[in-house]
Image 1 (cartoon, rainbow, N blue to C red):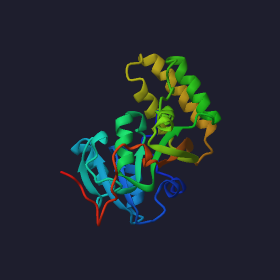
Image 2 (image 1 turned 120 degrees about the vertical axis):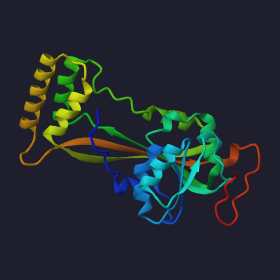
Image 3 (image 1 turned 135 degrees about the vertical axis):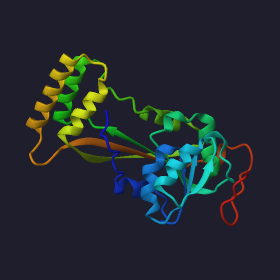
Image 4 (image 1 turned 90 degrees about the vertical axis):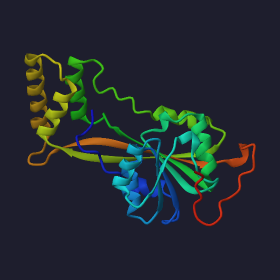
Length: 250
């Protein structure tokens, strides 16, 4: 279950994940990296927006309109070796296989890094635990998020990346009573009306007893971030640094 509006990306997390140079060369890999693209677009970074579909590239350009659009699969990135200072992957590392990790490492410059992030709900807050109990009384699997963060283990095992650093940032997203009830209703579209009415009444009461009126409740998130430094020593062929500008093989 998520808030109706996508949480903003914390500035502190962005600064840590971004290249050291504000005008560094950055590859946004996958449409889910759009929130990061929006934030980086305001920093002056040189952005390339890459997704395996045209629709995905359009989603990235909607948030970072000046980025260079490229349609390509992550395991076949059409860029010259060592073209980027950072590659950003948000909410989608679990979808990348070992071949894709090798492709990412190939296009990273020496001292470059893969920036990985996941925005996950923080269920440790008391009112969220109470909401979880109400929903699991209807569906035992409710609010059991599988976010994909376990894929960091595969990254750690990759020979193409060395030291992996980790940081975590807290993020609070306001949610109104109407939005919370709407989230619950969408979660159980086929629930019989009587039971849904009781559940909605319980959730409404939870909101009223937890919120500090007139302030809304704050839905807690945790933005988990990793920086994985590239290691080119395991490549069997010589990688030549790029020359002037960014070369893309078509």
